[in-house]
Every structure is written in structure tokens, then in C-alpha cells.
Amino acid sequence: VSTPGTRRTPLLTAAMTKVFVNGFDFGTTEDQVRHHFSSAGPVSRVMFQGKGSAIVSYNSEDAAQRALKTMEGSTIDGNRRYVNVKLDGDGFKGDRKGGKGDYGDRKGGKGRGFGGPRGPQVIVRGFDFGTTEEQVWNHFDHCGEIVELRFLSEGTAVIKFASEAQASRAVDMNRSTIDGNQRYVNVDFDGKGGGKGGKGDKYVDG
Image (cartoon, rainbow, N blue to C red; front, side):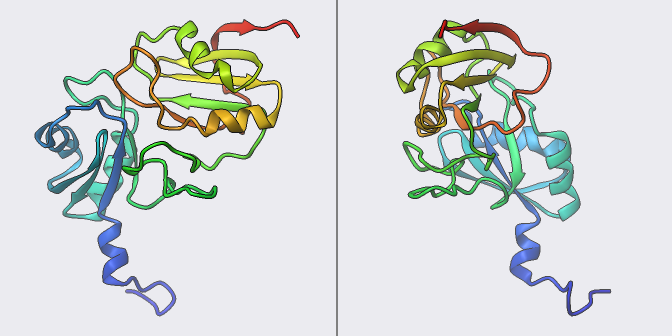
């Protein structure tokens, strides 16, 4: 039973049945997205938001929650990249001037994608499997002095710059595409120190 303090509006309830999906390959069809996400529950609608992103609507909140828990980091059949999944409107809003949310259909990107705290280190997500450390390095090299580049997994890397200002320039490259890749990358300040299990460290003498 809803209380006055917890009662949901119809609009809020509808939003809880939708997830925002980002990161699938350009050229992925609506049928591919629908088929992939139907494993979490019946999909009522798929609405593309631009190349590589879509809103998937479910018939229930439970199905949307299952999609959040089970489909994050999954790969659609025929794709080379995993997808990011969030409740529609949750967590993908830009908080810098000019940002409309890095996971929408806006080109170029100066909004921050994940809302991490600032610092000299950024996390890069979404580049194609098989991308080399050198390709990532060359893509961000013009932003400033790269002190360290470390792969966390296929498609994800942490880059540490000599200063926060240089890292900020890298964040401004959100939704850019590394040479030889099919997908753009998501770039945000990394507030967790790069995580565990990194490999392939590369240093620049200072």
C-alpha cells in the first residue's frame, strides 16, 4: 500500500520500466536489441536514440530490474562490444557545461558520462576488443603527458595524466572514436584508482 510519501506518479512508474542501453555496434538492428534484452522479460518497445544507443521498454519494473542486473556488460549477438545498461534517465546525465548526457545522441561530448570525482586519472570504456595499448595511447596523447596507461579488461583502460587539467581534456574527448575502431568511447574521471587486475603498464619518464 502506497503512503503519501512514497506514492509514485504514472510518469515515474513508466520510467521504472525503461532502461537506457549504450555501446552496441553501429548497424545493430532493432530486432537484435529486442532479442538480446527479451531474456530479461517481454520487451514492449525499442526506441533508438542514435547510433549505438536505445531505450528498451519492458512491461514491468521487475523485468527492467532484471535487465539492469543481468544485461550490463553483455554483448549483443553479432557485436564486438559489450553494452552499458541503466534505468532511463539515471546516471547518464552530463554535469559539465554543455552536457546533455553522454549516453544520448549528442555528437562530440563535453558532459561527463559517469559522474566520477575529478583528478588526474580517467577511465576509458567502450573501445573495440583487440584495440592495442598503442592505439589508445596515440588517441589521447595530445591531451597532455600520459604518466601511465593500464588495461583493466578488453575495452576498458585507465589513463593517468600529469595533471587534472590534462585529464579534463581527455574527458572532453568523450564519444570520440579511436582509429581503426567502429565504436566511440566513453571517458570519465576515475575516482577509484584504476581498480584491480590491470595489465600492460606503460610509463613516460618524467
